Length: 224
Image (cartoon, rainbow, N blue to C red):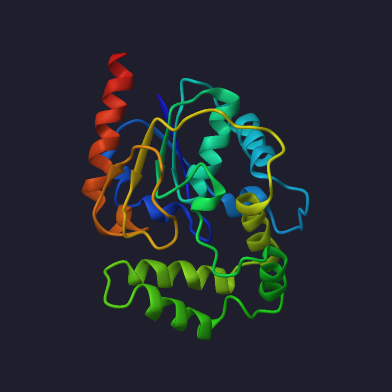
């Protein structure tokens, strides 16, 4: 059984570094930065990107997809094509669950290109406002550093995966949702979920609370 891990916005494969060692299986870590590329992709949607991933990795219903944040959103759309079991960690199935610091996406894209949205000053502002005195502060700061250094068009492409409307109705359901109610990035789901301690980065700060339900879920799949 292959297990594919998909990281969130601005993150990389290391977001899973605390939970992946506890999970058995043939593990594949996708890097969204590399898969999207640095060229502008103004027409990209998460559904189209999910299909690209399905074709590139030959994903089938025998694979399991684990996604954090945006990675769980991508996994949700992969399931639309493959009916693979998916695990969402701090993620969503309805875009209204995403907290938007700037409601206007075109304005966000402009501010990114100008270097205004992601810079050392805004890093200090967002870090101290949302994560001051929290164990996840160092995780958030590290991700923000990647957004400061990262290619601006790639970052915008990632945001397009989140905010560009998908013209097709998605009716699949995540198999396991793991979420912390103190998550300030993604509002907690309306649907049932496994509640964990911490916030958006619980998989790094309280990893056992995240990998234990995943291990139990994978055992159920193996026994079915």
